[in-house]
Amino acid sequence: MNSNLFKPITGLFLCLLFVAEVTAQTGRFQQAINYEIAVDLNVETNQYTGSQVISYTNNSPDELDKVFIHLYYNAFQPGSMMDERSRTIADPDRRVGDRISKLKPDEIGYLHVTELKMNGKPVKFTEEETILVVYLDEPIQPNSTVKFETKFMGQTPIQIRRSGRDGEEGVRYSMAQWYPKVANYDEQGWHSNPYIGREFYGIWGDFDVKITLDKSYVIGGTGYLQNPNEIGHGYEDAGVKVPNPKGNTLTWHFKAPMVHDFMWAADPKYQHDKVQMENGITVHHFFIPGEKTSENWEKLKEYTPKAINFLSKHFGQYPYKQFSVVQGGDGGMEYAMSTLITGERSIRSLVGVMVHELAHSWFHGVLGTNESLYPWMDEGFTSYASSLAMSSIYSESKNPLAGSYSGYFKLAKSGLEEPMSTHSDHYHTNSAYSSAAYSKGATFLAQLGYVIGDEVRDQGMLKYFDTWKFKHPNVNDFIRVMEKESGMELDWYKEYFVNSTKTIDYGVKAVNPQGDKTEIILERLGLMPMPVDLIITYKDGSSEQVYLPLVIMRGEKGNEQGMPERILTEDWPWTNYTKSVMINKKIETIKSVEIDPSMRMADLERKNNKMEF
Image 1 (cartoon, rainbow, N blue to C red):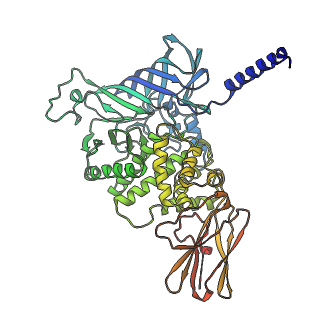
Image 2: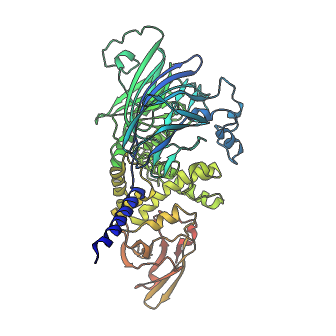
């Protein structure tokens, strides 16, 4: 062979390899960010000014010629997308309704960036309602860090949704989504969704925040206070004398490591209580004392540590040394190392909301799934975890997930259901969104225990946390953890229960005598296939199990504790709508035949699940 003929081909081949390497997907990455924020709030005008120094690291393989920054408070203005959405959706959130459209100039919210530099040079930017579009003269290169310097001004809106001032319970400030927040960029690109009141997605980093306001105010929220002996208000060390501040203001200095948001609330009437847990975690409670609060918030100090311990044991160790429960907001909302909850509640309601928002610390705070794309992986998993925690705290014997199943069944029968893969902003109704995200999301986890076994599912949840904490997992990441833990294929479960609205309905079609044997015929009436646990109960009180895993599972769950002995295991192809099994018992000995008496399978019509004799 002529070697000179081979050289150009080799060069072309190497060139193609280089192009393929540059243009191919390089896999997962995470951006990194650190914020230094100083803000000054005027409690007379409810307006504030601030500055930021943002260190932004582009860990992606892409050059970034634009950056998008959230300006959430601009949603609270008449004519905004949030206002329009709330006034036109079929079932508006009662907290919002048409209230935004009626706000006066001194009641609206706004957040404006007045100056922006990158690496010391001014850059161009335009404000598009709740998103600031930043145009860069010099793109941010892969694997490089740049520094943004911003100045901003804002006005805290009347309390309407999550953030705001002067809520119904008298809390002056619930400062959430209050600062210019850089949108996340991941393997799917930028996530610069306009704010219409749904979910959030952020970048983990370290926050260094200084808040200056009237010295009479007490602040609670995200982060560790750096100057407690200057501040007082229950933060200082025992026996330390707090100096009187000069002037009328105090500056509170907080640091929060590895969080993707920063919330704070402030009121001059706050009572601040601390509970020191044995594991070193400090629990803070902030509330306005009164007839509707004091007694129950005192009791709450017993329950918050219990909930932290339960959730850490079953879902992964809480990684921070502090958690703050703060009266404020408009219901309950999770934030980094903290939560805002309305406080004038019965003790059961107060504990329930606290536990739910605390449980978000695992799925929203530490795992950090993109809530806009996968709201059910946060809200649903949180509902599941908080239901179990409440059941444990109150030592209840009833099924803690019964409410989630009921909510899903109602949704599935309503005609309003949309797939859980729907972007959270784009559900047609609020009810379809909330039922899918909360009820069906929790049912997804509970029912997974039926598919792979509760014990395996529980082990998988700990593995999921340890594997994906601080890494933004998606649904495929979760499924792969459970596949590895169970040894089964579970993509079918995701495709049916997440990506479709197909429902489950199995029934006992017939039980026929066959001499000394009995034939049992089962049928699949719903469009979603599932494995079947069939329990045969005999007249002598004994029981046995027939287990029918799906062929596409490529495996089977192990014997579960408390379940009857298995006498038969046969695969059921999903293409077959009926399945006949034969047992070596006369029909005269049988008392009942029942599909899934554990009621973990989300079967929409349970009346046909059992046949009695």
